[in-house]
Image (tube, rainbow, N blue to C red; front, side, top):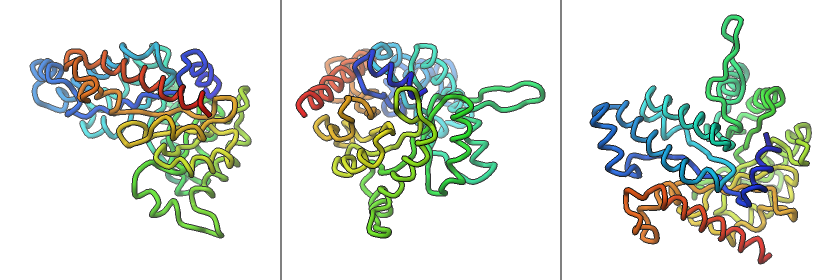
Length: 309
């Protein structure tokens, strides 16, 4: 799957992933009202609204980007109806030819981690049949439990030709409370990066990149520069662009000299673009068109930064 992701990045010339992280405050009023008229002000109504909202965005941007990243918590908050909306979103994106990164941040030990891996990337056995439950192409994984938590994902990835992105240096302000602590003279994030490189060495795609990638926030460009050297064959998923403060100039060192090696995420900066002053002229009815314009602007910003290095 890493090879497909790279092919899509090359064909779109956009190392961009759109985070499909719907919140009700982002959903235009006309979509909410339509859903509530049909399903009431219920969990089903909320899930129906976020599904229609997602669909409009996907229709508007799918030809511009290689991948999407739905964050499962934004769906889980609406219970079973929300999970159904998550699955419909995954399936619809794949039908549009997009690579789907399930932002699920799973990680446990033994059979529990194996079940997480099967649920999101693999196939579950039911009698004589097997089924893909959520069927994302990649999943985000928390490495805090070590190899016991990651190995089940590696096994499923090898079987299904899929991939993972391991949390290494996250974009949030308090990440340094643990991730920057020194152990034997190195920060924890660097030690995790070394472990990612080790896990990935046995999981290489034909492109020369591993299907074991890393999550490193755009808000920490200096750490990104270090980690790019630590993990030369791992793709880096870079959150924190746009709304969290990251910009194209911060991203240069996340990429390798071949112009590959990183894919940059923007969530509310794209899906809620119509709420920004810059795109306000689109209005609520034009929320999807505003998202498309935000993708184009992001693509140009990243290209300009890479071309200037």
